[in-house]
Amino acid sequence: MAELTTLEEHRCFDGVQGFYEHASEAAGLPMRFGVYLPPQAREGPQPVLLCLAGLTCNEQTFAIKAGAQQHAARHGLVLVTPDTSPRNTGIAEADADWDFGTGAGFYLDATREPYAQHWRMESWLMEELPALLQRHFPLRTDRIGVLGHSMGGHGALTLALRHPGRFRTVSAFAPIAAPTEVPWGQKALRGYLGEDRAAWAAHDAVKLIEGGAKAPPLLVDQGEEDPFLATQLRPERLEQACAAAGQPLELRRHAGYDHGYFFIQSFIADHVEHHARGLAA
Image (cartoon, rainbow, N blue to C red; front, side, top):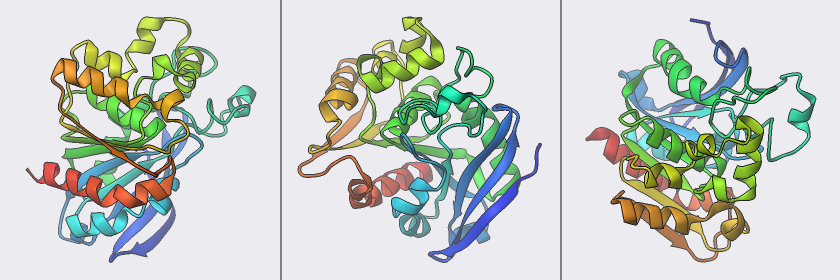
């Protein structure tokens, strides 16, 4: 197992917020992530909340902007914030658009060249990173929740549905709920997976639920002034699929809130509490 490089560490709510890099076998490149260790981690391993960020973000975005550490410190949760894609891949077209390529990994393993070699986000997150974290940090990989925002909300939902039993708790802010039906998702799925619509469906939360996949009860918050609500997010499709399949879902709509981190800051305490409650059970 490759060793970690510590990039920086900071005292935070009596815990430690750090950022790290390792040589990823899955991606074939260095990958970065953040870890917040609450003060309870000094006494022994604690449950984990995997926090997946959205388009254009990196491993620091959620850690700096969401305001989650104060709540994680109160509940004794380790926060893990992975980067959103490989970096410095040498693929020129990967940096051409803000919504595809660098900073837009969509939490899947690409099968289409030139992305198949390095864009292996699902393998990194579900196989390589947990083992690395368990080796280097006092955390419990048998008690993990997943939270995501926008593209990361898509990742939280689909990874939980594709890997039953891996996550005890799931929540999302403004997720891309039906990526096969919206421009962001179609661009990414076509670019990473080619034209096989069946392959697309395997990374679409609505399609997965319609196909019988199950997850722990879902908590989803959506701002009603989100500029991407109608064109990119489609939470009503998630609501319909969950109702038809009997998948527990609490979808909360919030008047006046948009897509950004001020929205997340406003409700992050509820999400951390949701995970803490489920991970303690």
